[in-house]
Length: 266
Image (cartoon, rainbow, N blue to C red; front, side, top):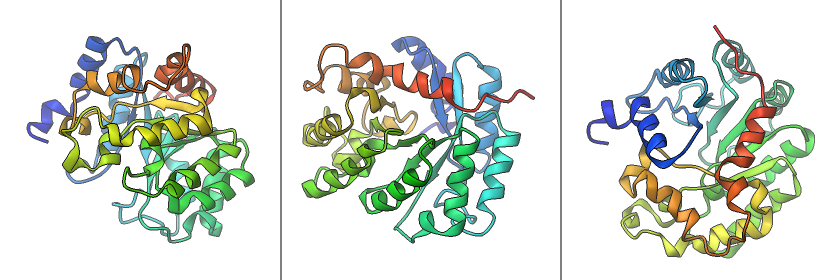
């Protein structure tokens, strides 16, 4: 993004939160492109604003040289013991079977034992493997990014595949990333009506209490403002019923954070 030093800063995030009445937020760290030290940056932000911010650390995401290589369990352990985190984020590429590998299974087992929220960026191709992990670890709390990676041009079977994960009570979905669902080249077409069938289908499968709003700050600026990221749910998800916004716009995520690993202080 232009002027990333300020527009992507924690100070700008706090400003947007203040302007839009958002009390707390989770920083989903991403050590990508110009951000190799993003875990450290996120940790410093949490220490600076301990009552406003929480952190999910980047652990072995697809852009890292460590991605799906031996040592993942130890790297997760180190992150849990050295960073003030409530969870971790793990972006994946094509399904290589790693979730069901011995190390993948041990990785998620440790996450469950440490009460770390697993914030996973994946698409439908990974759903069966994640379901197997959740069956092995019923206490593992999972938060899937951006409507489970379903695209507005996907067949309905893609949504149905993600919806199978609703059988696992600790799987939650971010009601966010509408601009990714329609493709960034169509991000100008706010409020992304061609993605609403995905949001409505996830609502039908998971219910309001397992959907969590997310802003996608700062990357959202390619398609919308912070306020618009809120209003796409508050105003344009017309299928929502009275009372649904409270859990979606913070209630559920607050509960998950309160029940997650206690934030370490250093």
